[in-house]
Structures are given as C-alpha cells and as structure tokens.
Image (cartoon, rainbow, N blue to C red; front, side, top):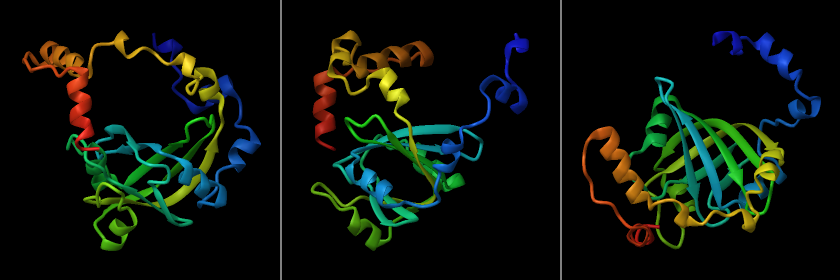
Length: 208
C-alpha cells in the first residue's frame, strides 16, 4: 500500500512539475486596492486555524458584504458572531495565532486568500468598527496580514457552485437535528431529541 503513497517533495514534483511563474509572483505581502475591494464585496469567508497539537479547524463566517473590515494594508478585523460556543477557532488562535482566510463573493468564481497572525481583540475601537444593525460583537479577530493572493476560478468552474440548476433539494437529506441525533446515538450511545428543520431555522433566526 505504501508503495503508492507520495512521501517526498521530489516525488511530488515529479508528478506535478514546478509551479508556474505567475502563480508564485501573484502572492503579495499586503492588502492592495483590489484585495480590499474584494473583501468589501464578500459576505462569506472560511477561516482556517490550527491548535498547538496540530488539530485543524475550518469555520465558515458570514455577514453583510464587507462585514470583515480592512483598516490597514496589513490589518483586517473579523467580528465574532454568536455560534455554538465550541470556540474551536478562538481557542486555536489563543494557542498558535495562525490563521488562513478564504473570501468568496457570490457569482465570482475567483476567491481571495489571506494568511497571517491573529489575536482576539476587545479593544473598544476595534469593536466600534464592527458594530452592525444587530449587535456589537463580544470580540473581534484582528488579523496581521502576511500574504495575500487571488485564487483561480477552476474549482468553482468545475463545481458550478453558483449555478442555481446545480442546487440540491434540501429534502434529499434529513434535518441537521435528525442527522446529529443519529450520529450521537451511533458513536456516543446517547439519545437526544431531534429538531426539525423548521425548528432549527427558527432558533437560528433568533440569534443571527
């Protein structure tokens, strides 16, 4: 089995070849006007983080377009909204401070990647910049930007993610509550009450 595993960088490059020159040159160390405008249009970002033991987390964050604030070419602010209180991302930031962001704009096949160092800020000035119509966040994830680059459209073109005809009928899967009930029963041997999809959506609306 291991004979078919790629375990060295040399073997990997033999399979793929060198990176294209433009792909290497596109990475920049700060947010320029294009990256800033892209973030201003984005209502959705996937936030990747890692803990001290190497455990990984990728968490979706959403809001009105521009909910992530660019305050400087090397600084952006991500307001933390109410969630499930697992705090996986926030705990990872405390542990390592490393963060990766993938910004998406509905209808755009390109994405924007931002990597850097993050801290959890309760600075009143940071909080004030992230106030929205619903709330002042409990804290803000303050990111010191280290690398920025536009990611090509191929994955979105292959998946046709924004094509309405490709949307799956929600009825093809049980509600999240029902799936969680089955998973907890199977792996934890415990019984919980399953929310219906309507109950779950109503609970979400109360804390958006």
